[in-house]
Length: 505
Image (cartoon, rainbow, N blue to C red):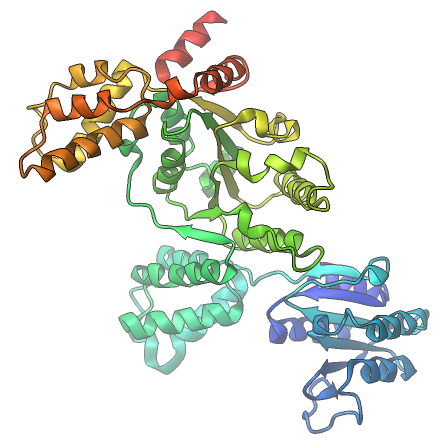
């Protein structure tokens, strides 16, 4: 809000205020308007025309419902004022509206008048780009949310029912609501009271459910529910150790210790070796929400600049509910076109990629980016530059000990008694197989036995594995090239390989 105050005090003629919170933004602008010299505030909507702030809507200025007439009325005013236009984005592409805005602000010099375009959607014509300043109205902080929570704790005799709320519980309820608007926080606290009849630490999950609704409404991000723990991943001991060391990286204790917030990691590797699973289970390990960003959903050819706006909106939502893990699966496919010709899609891929890189470089919010990739040669070199990620890990095909662990995990999920299986023999029979191929071999063996109405055996698994041709044989050149690239450019995820490389130096 400080930036908005400075811009209004500096007599900026045209401000684009991005916010869905009209009432809260109006209150903030009203407070700014009382600073010397005080100014009147006028509101415009397409339903009521221009009305003075704080006056009844019936006292509208005549014939100002159309945006052109409203801007013309503003241009004629000789007194200082702040003129808020709500949802003008729906009309701003009109040549007449754009021209009236340019004419109006050209006459504002020395008159202490400001037009504020208030909207949840950013839509700026090329003609206005040099004249407008875009400001994102911040979501409520802990202090403002505390006021909302207080009103619920003390209203309608709720104080007695909520007296068990500890200081720590109160902080959890407030932190759970961070990223919500004031109205959303008010509604979800009411929902918690209806569901549980009280507001205590136990209702944090109800509050978090509202954040899941935000993700669903966004349409580009997906909120992933994670049931598996990191123990569900076979092998990759070095990668697990790295992640476990950073389990408390986003806590206040880590900040007081002087540690920076982790930025992200890139996991390269052979398909089917657990890259996506490790990304998902990290959310459970760290106790953070997991959001998947689908770059394919970002692209929208209906309007120039819409794809970039989609990405900005998705990243803004992720930041609003941080700390959070932002998961991008197979990023090599998502940004494969970013290094090519701009002619193929009008340069949209390159702009999307550039916007994402800029955000990664400049973000200060606790959003940890976890990206996976199978084909490193498809990734633009800028994406792999030092500083983009905290670490780049390489996940190779599992070795003998890792294959044994993978068999134990998958057999243990399906049967309680796995002593009847010779796991060493199974692990030895599938050299060059990925974890996913091992699992599918086991599933195929179970289907064969199920069709014959009997329990599956060691022989069934060996037969299923023998009939499977692993990727390491069908795509030998791809796997070899990836290993060669990663040899001196990425950190091995397997413990024994990592230890061997450390000994080399």
